[in-house]
Image (cartoon, rainbow, N blue to C red; front, side):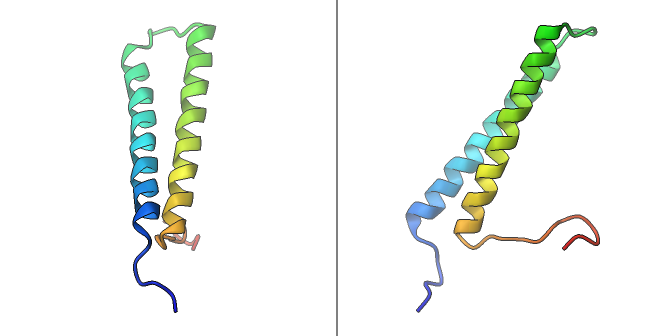
Length: 80
């Protein structure tokens, strides 16, 4: 028989993944608030790293959500 509710550990992993994603998105926002009008190559590299981290965190959050049964189709029209 399938459990109606995911294990507490799986839900905690999802909460942690969501918190990690939130922190990564906040880091992108913080960077964007301080980036100069004309970014230099170091700024571009930092931005790329921040976006990579945020995307990885989002992917981890989605995988954790899938593990607890919170799988959704695409939220884009005509995609799911």
